Structure formats: C-alpha cells, structure tokens
Image (cartoon, rainbow, N blue to C red; front, side):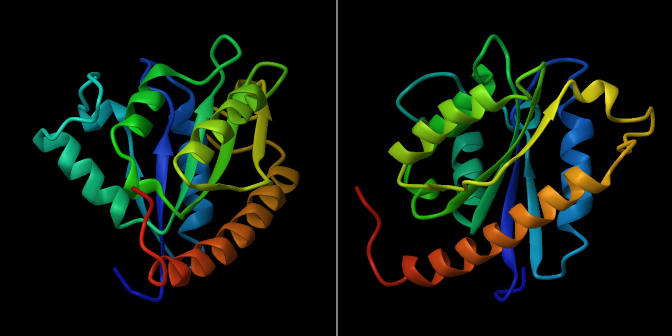
Length: 190
C-alpha cells in the first residue's frame, strides 16, 4: 500500500443469499479504483466469519479483521435497509472493533425500497458517532435499485448517481487525509 494513497475499507452491509449488495458494491468499487489516490480493501461479513458474541472477541478472525480496519484511513458502508433499519451482520461487523474505527471518516451508499435505505443510514450515523468516527454528510441512495441496474450490473442512467458518488468521494478524500494527519497528533480515546 502506498502511504500517499488513502486506504478505503469498502464494507458490505448484507450477508443475505442473493443480496443486491454485490451489485452496488461493485459499482462503488469501479468508481474508487478510477482514482489512483485511493486503495481499497473489501470487507464482507459473508467472508469474515466474525463471532456474534459481545464484547469483541480476540479470536483469529476478529484479530485479522481489526488489523484490516486499522490499516484503513476511511470507510464506505454499502447497506440495505431491512425493516426500517440496517442488517444484523453489519452491526456485528461494527461491534467487533472499537479503536480501529476512531477518528476516521465513514461514508454511506444505501439502497432499499422507496426510502433508498436512508433510515438505515441515519441509524448508522448514531452508531459511528459513538465510535468517534466522522460520518459524511453526503451519501448516495438507491430507491428500488433492482429497477435501476441492468442484468450486467450497470446503471441504466448512470450520470446523476455517478456524479453524487464522485462528489462524496472527493469529500471522503479530504476528510480522510485531514484525519490521517490529525490521528498522529492526539492519542486515541479509550
């Protein structure tokens, strides 16, 4: 990883079979990799095998996950909205660490029915505030996304949402660089 690059953790919010999260996360990833100032690590609860017990465990899977989070300068959470909230596997992923989230920006790309996942994002902002993370004001939201993408995973009308994502990424870059510099000046909260 290049020290000048901003290392982004791209977090999949769903672990359901047949999830639409893969389509949207791949669309986000395609935008991230176009900018050489970013590097990316995809963090998928289906692959991480994190335990559901609390407090956070010190098993091998959790320790490896924490190490990957610690290496990130910023995060993008791709989340669906299930029953007006965010999915349980995402909460497990968030709760598996604490200090690794601190003083880092978090941006959101959400999807769902008519609300486009925005209720899930509002709840996640509260959770990340408790972890001393900075949630980005700007987000990208897909209402009824299964109608917006073709069978190959491409947006049928990409421009408005692509512009929103590019705008969000520019702000994430600014916050990520600013907070990376600042993290080295003040110790993390307990």
